[in-house]
Amino acid sequence: MAVSCNGASVEVPAHDEVISTPDQYRRTITPPKIMSSTAHETTSGLTEEFDRDSGYESPPGQEKNGSNIAGKLQQITLPFMQRAVITPEMGEELNMVLRKIIVRDPAPGEVVVRIYYTGICRSDACFSVGPGPGYPKHNHVSGHEGIGAVVKSHDPSLIGHTVGIRYLGSTCGSCTYCLRGLPTSCPSQLNTPKQIAGTFQEYATVPASCVVRLPEAIWNGKIDPALCATALCSGSTALTSLRAAKVRPGDVVIVAGIGGAIGHMTGAIAKQVLRARVIGIDIKAKINKLLLKDHAQYSDFALSAPEAHDGDAWLNFHGALLRACEELRGSCGLTRAAEAVIVSSSSFSAFWRLDDYVCDGGRIVCVGVPEGENVLAIPLRSVVERNLHLSGNLMGGHREALEVVEYILSGQIKPQITIAALEDIPAQMQSIVDCETIGKVVVSI
Image 1 (cartoon, rainbow, N blue to C red):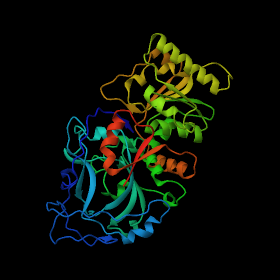
Image 2 (tube, helix red, strand yellow):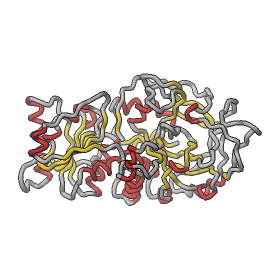
Image 3 (cartoon, rainbow, N blue to C red):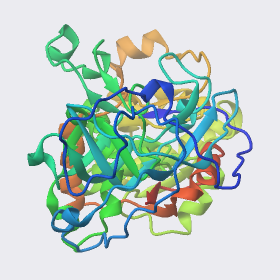
Image 4 (tube, helix red, strand yellow):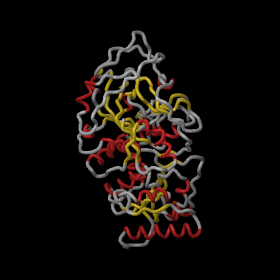
């Protein structure tokens, strides 16, 4: 999922403030007997409104690479407090801070997940301002790409399961949209971090229906488990977009926004899984950074976006684009543009003249959603006479996320990630908004 939003400076205050659970996520519970590794103590009659203060207890450390996570869960004691990155009060600018918050006990039908890794998505910046409809106004916890393990549940069979927490948590599965393969339009959907507190915290209490079971092979030590966080949102969106573009082996695919989280995953899957040829386009600053790295896994050519969409600047860019297409095809057949273009950029300029990026019969797939009421313009004559196809894609589903996890575990693709700490999230979020990062930022918690 790709949504952009302007952010400003980010404040990181001292870490000594304790807050209660946001109203949006609060529940009043009379806890029944709960199956858990070792439950933290509760005061008789205390509700989960958490109006009392408590000292902070750090979560127990665990090895995450090559360890048997499920085998160690029985040793975990849930703390009363945890660290989290929150937005104390929603406003027009980013205001994400590190605080201590309550670890909320699960209600019936919920689980507590110990978060080990979470990706940072640019859309988390938009989820943290406003607020948008349905989002809490205070003490908002963002994040929607978490990997962890169930450590507390009313259902003992769930304890120890490795799970993922995604933006699209659950749907009804029976409405018109769900039956037509459009779960993102389901009116009964639950979203993280909208109705459900997000993954920028050490422990997430979420509905059991809103987690996706992940393979235990994540922890086998053969790969860095952090890589799998890229599959939950960015990777699933990339795969769904490529399928919408009907990419075949040997096709030339243009990925606009190749330096971003979704963009580089799109390029990697197109090249390594679908055996297509990839031309990556991004702003000049990102292309310069990308050229200093080994980008061969997700891009055959890397071109800077045109500085203008008319005059010599456009003619020079389009000429270079056609030459790249011809070289990738081995100078075989007609000189023509790409079979598909997938636009994951957060800059609206990337959506101009898209009909000139593709050959006749080509497919245009829009993934990025730049800020503002932007209007996409493609000449109707081109659409009709050249048989062009235009579609949009918000994100992939659980199935696509699991398929991308399999690509990672099998070594078919290796996402480019930057590891950060929980306390680094505010600064990293600002860097993403400012288009300064390459690939995916993953937080190790």
